[in-house]
Image (cartoon, rainbow, N blue to C red; front, top):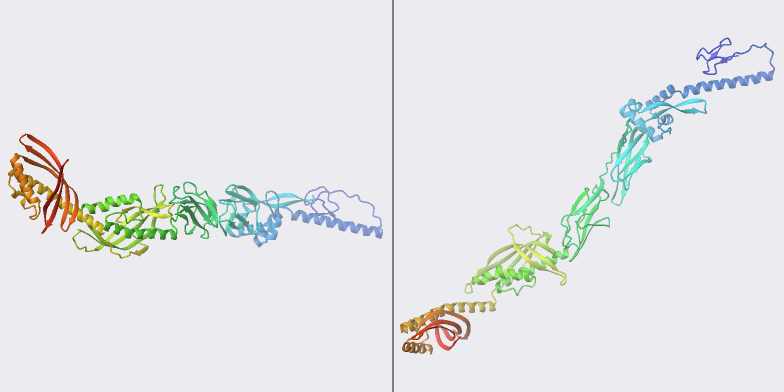
Length: 581
């Protein structure tokens, strides 16, 4: 009967004491005298022998199949033949758990891209238990790999070769996955949140033998965004909020929001700014969210409110030329009291001082609707650039006006009166800047000229001015006539048919008889009243020093006379009264 070594399965002869293959001592078989076997024993011995042969053969196979050398050889063959299933049966992680099919594919991809040595450097053949307690099992143990991502995480998920991997750790703003077997993984990053939806693919090289995690490259433009309102005013903006996907995000007292996100910066997300002003709520047009810091400018006026401002400016343009022609501010309905005071000081007073009148018409208004910005002070108001074109002429009262174009470009300040629910012009500052007009409105074309009242006042002023000069000359010549006793000094300044000529002549004779002379100090025309055709009643204050034989004395009189204008010359016609004051 054949003999086999129970340790290694090598066949030995009956004479051998130790196994010639492995040196194990063999049990000695006692030689018994051969006895004929029964048929039943022969069958039994045959079965036993067969079982023994099978056990010995299985032992030999098991030891060879699970040995370190065979495992390494089978691993190499699996890599060479790209047999993921075989690879999956051979490879374990450091914790002894088998890798899955997707990890096996990742290892094959790494071996193909970087060579087998890249995989070998990350793996060793190690014993991992026994098979039914009989055979030492060897497996290819790989260095555990981890994947790492740092950035916005809400709504972001990852798959590795299409499989979700458990998170190894998660902190604020970072997450790591693993353990994974070494390999090249196709990582799919998927974002789905309040502010967008998208995905990206990238390759992850998990081939680190130092224990450091491999960085997950995410091709999604993803981040947290903060918004700042560039023209924010806490005084005028009663409420301001960023609106994204119908969500209101408040703005703080500095015009900024907190960080919002994650947001996909791929052009799919938009924001707008809604602001409540004293004149109503205004929503800006949508802007594309493109970066982590977004500046947004508040729209100040709605289109309806802009139309109201333009209407105010148009009405003001008409009132401006009308007030000039009337030389008073009563025409204004669109301005504040402070504006009227400035207009009187800077526009009307110089006209009056220079005896000038204005005739003209409002031709057109040009407005730059894009030039609107908020006033710096606490009053709810705006500044807008506007250009007013007139056809006008500044002329004297007696001149015929010859109108020509005048253009005035202003930065116009308007304030909003909440009680009246309308805009008023507070100031208009002249500027040389060229206006980029977005809207042109024609004026009425109506001619505005000096009013009858203004003409009458001016005529009265001119007459009074002429009479002041005349009376200074007349009274001075009258004193000369008294002192020289020569009536010819003053005779030509009186009407021939009036009573004053004879009275004055007789008065000179009277004063001469008394030895009285006079010194002229001053005369002031106080009042001029029309008293008929080319006839006026003039009240004046006259001041003299009266000299008589007993001494001198200052005297002041209120004098009322009737004067006439004859052939362009002023003449005294009648002395009505003289009263000492």
